[in-house]
Length: 410
Picture 1 (cartoon, helix red, strand yellow):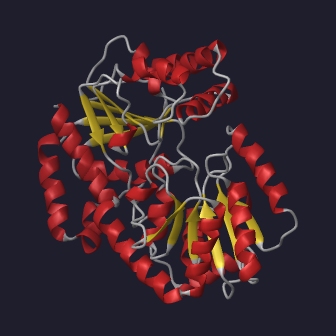
Picture 2 (tube, helix red, strand yellow; picture 1 turned 60 degrees about the vertical axis):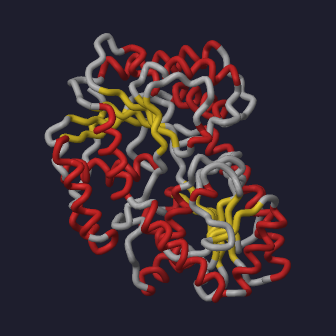
Picture 3 (cartoon, rainbow, N blue to C red; picture 1 turned 120 degrees about the horizontal axis):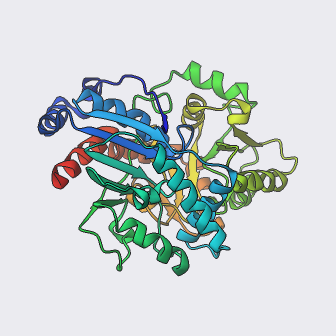
């Protein structure tokens, strides 16, 4: 069978001090008619990435409201994940070598994984691209199948979209972050627009004391008494880590003591990530105020939390971004955000209210300098950002959206 991911216990009532008792009761009421329904979430990894973080909170909360929820992970090899990377980049608009071999590898591993999927479920939720074709090989479809895409496919390469569209159309429903992400030629009975969310009680987002924050940051040689700019993201061309360094160098011309922290997660099955790690390290050179940190240095969710809370400004200089949960995380910590005006980022950053949306490197540097020189304005925007997240992007809202989606499909 597929790998079953064990999750810890979470109780919905623990979120009432954050979202209010009325919201908790409305979720319980919505869950009542769904008691005992069997649900399985399937993705490609239980470690790192926004989907894994969401499921580690969502699955136990579904259990707590009476659903029989599971989380399983498909299997694959290096060539499968390379094929998936090619398809994903093509879906986001990159000109990729989308060959027949890439298609065959992608489909072969989906077929192998489908053979390992045991049992029958009322709802099967497939997350992102890697397991998309599981349904294509299901001999007897039982229950409702839902596909969830977190990326921005608006500029998808035609050859890639032509390949995956028939696979999507086998589903009962598809979920996108923005309505603008839904391609005009996609024929599907049910399309839902549901943005992702964060768990405010996870190690990555829970409150930390100033002593804990300083202990974490000092461990990695970053000075908490000097300005800190941080970007947390995968290293890829879409996240523009080289542009982040160029931006920092413009800021440093005016604010000499500034430091840059780039935090990433390195996976053994991500060849593109390793390539960009090397590129980023070379671009940083021997500037000791640039700190390139990852799980290789022991940086996990708690450390990300500490660095985000210690930072003066959080940036996200993506070229393309489906949503960007790291922005929600930063806003939740009351931090001012400077982010690219692309994809799902404007859904979170209300320009000039919860942060700044920017275009090029120079504008990004200009806004960062403004925040560093105007800490009161930074604090005001950070506070507005935290409240905006509380109302719109917490895991309780996502749980409620799931329950409503289930109701619409029954």
